[in-house]
Image (cartoon, rainbow, N blue to C red):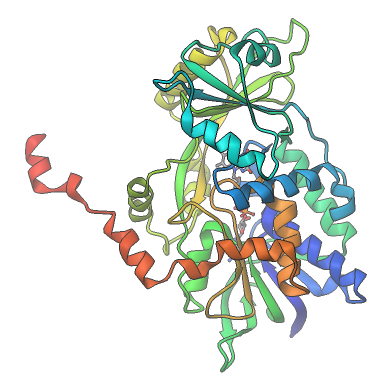
Length: 427
Ligand SMILES: Cc1cc2nc3c(=O)[nH]c(=O)nc-3n(C[C@H](O)[C@H](O)[C@H](O)COP(=O)(O)OP(=O)(O)OC[C@H]3O[C@@H](n4cnc5c(N)ncnc54)[C@H](O)[C@@H]3O)c2cc1C
């Protein structure tokens, strides 16, 4: 039987980052880096971690998440010290656009800027003229909008990140099992996981890190615990833009007027996706629509379900036309259907499980690529020696989703819109 110090389940950016950080810290403290085993049922970065937008920004309404974002941005910029590898990135900053309220500003966003200043995160309100100056001339900005600049935001390319993850794994001597699926667990009388049963091995381990994203609910129900994570489908579209003029530097555009994120992409493409829905009722309905313990994200990862349909592309095109002058004769380049992994409050699940003491969770909840280096370091703090990052992580413990919380959450799916009465009105 194989024996490891830690088994990390899931080779997305969060699992790979956890394995790399832990192996490097073990080595530095006289341990064996190869005693960290990363198990991925397909190949590294083949799920959500290859189908995101590569945006790393700190501005976040949750102040702890904002702080973690700031620490993570520094880590991406100095990755060699953390993972032993460098990954190409672009420092184009981000422009946030909100609708003006009746006082000709956006009070909520002004408050956010104030809160972020206390961290401090560089996120400032700027004039329309200043916003025009940081955008290429093909970007439309309107008088009824208000603008905020986050100059320290950076952007990466998921394909380069994936390559960097492989290099980091190799350099750190992590034991990698690809095309191997974790099937179930054996526990001892204390309720700790002692054996991990995969398609190829039975493995003993002292610690288990769960980085299986939306598959966690199904997988860990076999260990008798409930992990509230589900999926929310989302579409991505890429358009070709002209390269005849000088290459323009475009900041990431977080467009909260049209509910869209845009970035420049692969030297000449404009990339777009819509953000997660934020309402509690919408989130709970999403959970109800995508039964969490059935197949995880396999349904959406199936190639036939990754296709875009014509009306979806046209809808995105209409939104993009409002923001860009040069997309009039749009050239569709590529697109796909992906998903966000979501939790009931749309925040991460981090740190030790409340029942299984040697199980540590590292789940993203929608927007977590940016946190990969900081979450990796946090996981090793949970296992080796607690520190500031694990303290931050405690704010996102799975404990918060206790029976009372979940009862109230499910009560939000009231089903009124599916009543016979409503049906009657549409007959
Ligand atoms: C359109 C879109 C744009 C996004 N843009 C951004 C962005 O700009 N910035 C940002 O920060 N975030 C972004 N995100 C979110 C980001 O993609 C995710 O938060 C991140 O990739 C999550 O990584 P992960 O490692 O948790 O998940 P995954 O990459 O899904 O990894 C989980 C892995 O676990 C494996 N697995 C599951 N079950 C098992 C098992 N039983 N045995 C072995 N392996 C198993 C799976 O195969 C998978 O590879 C975006 C998401 C979408 C959909």
